[in-house]
Figure (tube, rainbow, N blue to C red):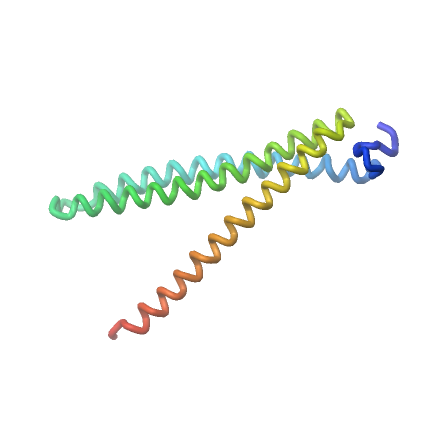
Length: 152
């Protein structure tokens, strides 16, 4: 590699230090995405196990249908969380592959694709963060309402 690689047509050039930083981010992105894939699989399996466990708890068959519903809802929530994590990590993994190809081939098209995957990763992470904040707000409000109406 030369000290200056012209990866973009609009005149932006990346020096060896910038390319080194991008290469290092590719390694960390791949590592974190693989961990995320493993973790999302564990969450999905835990959701299924917890759903079946809640569905089969107790011996009172009169309440069995409500437990089955609760177990199903629990499993769906776990699987929804696991799928959000999976697709977020998928974008991070694609970024790591594309940025590595862009660096190795000095290909501006691959650099653009890598940036698109990184942008989508941050969009998904932002949406998930907003959803988590909203759920947390509702949970805190529910706790305050429950505490207000509870009797000691």
